[in-house]
Structures are given as C-alpha cells and as structure tokens.
Image 1: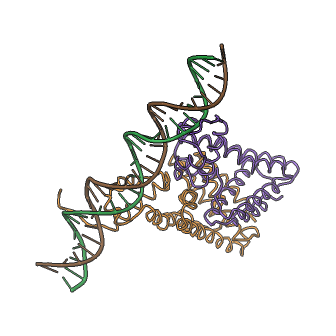
Image 2 (image 1 turned 90 degrees about the vertical axis):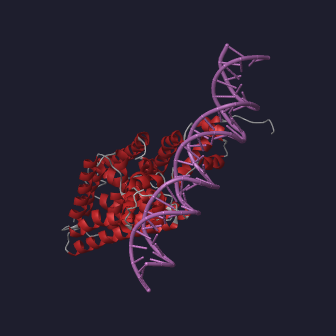
Image 3 (image 1 turned 180 degrees about the vertical axis):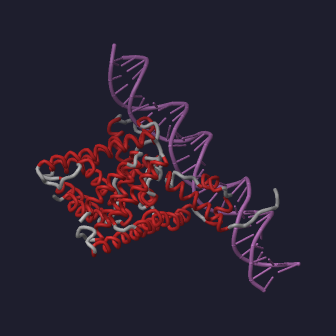
Length: 198
Length: 198
DNA sequence: CCAGAAACAGGATGATCGTCCTGTTTTCAT
DNA sequence: ATGAAAACAGGACGATCATCCTGTTTCTGG
C-alpha cells in the first residue's frame, strides 16, 4: 500500500456523475448496479457513499446536473443561436441524427429515458424531470415568440407549438430507439418544419 | 388442505398477464418483482414458472399479447372508425386525456414505457416493440392516404406524417407523465389538428 | 380404468443488490 | 505542530431477487 493519495473531492464527484449519467441514461436506473458505477468510475464504496449517500440522491444529482446540462448544450443553446426556430429545430435534430449514425447505437434522449422510468417512482424524481421539460418548452416558446413578430413562422400559440416540438422530438427519439435508426428523427424534423412554416 | 382444485391453465395465464401488464407498464419492468406478480395474480411460484419459465418470456408475452392489444383497442380501432384522421386523432387523444383526469394519475403509454426501458436491453424486446410501432404508423398512414384522396388533409407524405402523429402522441404522454397532467396531451391534439388541416 | 402428461403447490437456493461500518489517510484552520 | 473534520478504503451485512426443484393433484388419450 503505497502511502500516496491525493484527495480530489471535485474530480471524484465528477467521475461518479459521468459514469452514472452514462449508465442510467444508457441502460436505465434500475438496470444499473452501484458496483458497476464503482468499477466504471474507478471509485471505492467508501468514497462513493461519502459523496452520494444513496442511489436516489445520485440519480437526482445526475438529473439536475448532467441531464439538464445535456439538454441545454445539445438543444437549447444551438436553438437560441439559430437564425429561426424552424432552422434551429431542424439543424438540432439533424445533428443528433448524424451523431446516432456515427455511434451505431441509439440510446435515446437522456431526459426521456429517465422521465419514463422514474416519474412514477418518486415525487422528487418527477419534479426534477418536469422542471427540465418546463425550461425546454419555455426556451422553444421564447424563440417562437421572437419569430412570430417577424412573420418567420405561421400564426400560432408559442407555448402550445413549443409543446408539440418537444413532444415530437421526444417521441421520435423513442421510435428511433425502438427501431435503432435515425430515420424517425429526420422524418419528424421535416414534418415539424412543414407544420411551423408560415 | 381441501382436496379440491380445478386446473385452469387459460385463466391462470390470463390473470398472470393482466397483473404483469399492469405492473410492468405502471411501475416498470425492473421495478417489478416476480413475487409481486405472484401475490397480485394470486398464483403460486410453481404455476407461474410453469406457464412462463422466465421474467423475460413473461414480458415478451405481455408486449405481444397485451400491449399490442391495448394500442389496437384504444388507438387504432377508434381511429379507423373515425370520419377523418384529424377527427380520429383528436378524439382519441381527448378520450385518453379524460381517462387520465378520471384516474388522478398518469401512468403513461404502455408501449412507450416499455420501449424506453427495454429497447436497449435485449434484441427480442426491441423487435417486439418496434413491430407494434410499425403497425401503429402504418394504420395512421393508411387513414391519411384515404383522407388525402378526398382532400380532407393538406397535401403530405402519409408515412412521414404518420410518424409525426405517433411521435407527438408518444412525447406528449412522456411530458404528461412527468407533469402528472393531461394538458400536454390536449395541447398536442390541437396542434396536430392544426398541422394536418388542409 | 389407468398410465403418462400437464397443471399446480410451496419452499429452497445461490446470486446480487444497496447500504452501512470500521478504519486509515489527507487536508486545513489555528 | 496539532487536533478535528473531511476524504477515502474495503469489506460486511441483511434483504431481496429470479429461478429451480421436489412433490402432489388434476386432466386426458387409449
């Protein structure tokens, strides 16, 4: 036992969250054992339980830190930077489709996966997931509102249309996962553009 | 131990499938223990393992027998009987929304729930689920094709639009489950009608 | 009526799961 | 420097879990 060790609580927490995010979203919460996370993150049981006293607290941290971040980075930020909602939504879905083709495996939308598995399980899970869905819809609605003033989309209720956009993406991802193909995603991208066009 | 017993293999199988369908779709596959099913169905371990040698074979039977039937009865049959695709989709979603309000709890779409939890787990699961999605999309596409000839929908690709319809419903159900509210379902019903209108 | 198969009963079993517990080492304020 | 708190190590523990196994009862073809 070489007496050299460096305490790195932040890095330890980060590695655990990374491993947990990947496993929980990739194969599911209940399908993932804590010992898998230990080996995947290269962490001992003592360290793990020091940072996350229970599996429930761990997945809550994953939802609030990692899943929220993933939605923000892959969806909301690109959408905000896009010239219009239609172009933004289309290019985001296309980018994700390209990523799926490249990966050879469709793991599905992290938020969606955890939402369906955990929403019925625990009130705290449900609230954390619902909050992300809420921010998602709000961001799309805001972008639609801006386009609306310039006539870049057909006349619509921004909030309601945002719900359709998020729902269509979420459902397309579910089908893509079942089919192991990016085709539903691309199809919905086109159809959404059609539906929003002025 | 009164020596009276009546063998009822069909009824036994039916009760097990009912209990398994309810539990797997309501709380999840991995979240359901076999002993829960035993007590819920009033079945002994011996009888259960006689009809379904493993949990995997049980959920496969649930998907192929019960989930496929649920989709057919609550979705496809009403849609086929509706005068138009738009009215059919709208009334199906509204009917489901009413049901959710009445139940006080949103369990989500059975197919969707199992799709996201099991698609990544096993190839047989994935294939069984994908087959149902396929039939679903085909039924909507067929209805759209019929409407198309009579000008009851805007000009569109029936297959692609069917994908959007199923995706929007699936995603709306996911959001409804996270929000524990039927509102996303009603919103998407209206938005879909808007998008398909000639 | 009578074997043989199917249906059912009920507990045993080994594996695995999440959590906890007792130590040891590192860090840091004083 | 030093004591206390935080960070980490590594195994133990009880509770499930899914499956299997040995019997017993009921059905069915001949």
